[in-house]
Image (cartoon, rainbow, N blue to C red):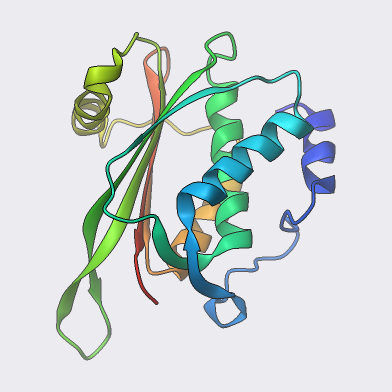
Length: 194
């Protein structure tokens, strides 16, 4: 990532300081919000700050509801950074795919039995192959299954560790798959309620 871009993202309104780990769930402002609106705001801010870095995002919304309990500021920042990572994988390819749907997540509280909680699942991806709009979900799921466990480290993995902690503080899950010359994919699960 070029240093000029890093400076401009740190100046963006509401971005977290990379110098401190603000992932203590007690300091989060978790409340019900429209998560798809927050994603669209993150995309608009990214396009505004990085006007030379155009993204053509296709969102496939298969969820029953867009209302999720989360810290809007921190999740917006996470989306922003994911969009940046996706952009920098093959910048000549502007097409990014996002699948959003209802799901479940297993949560085990110490001393209690395992619970399956209603959740939402995001898949963010940029692949080197063309994807017809009618097969976005199945293509991304196949990529995930085929390459899970074969991922290569990303150059800016430290950024992703930070945002993975933000997702985990929400009791969510964060997965990343990077296969050079094939694609990059991020998978996020967030519980729907606190």
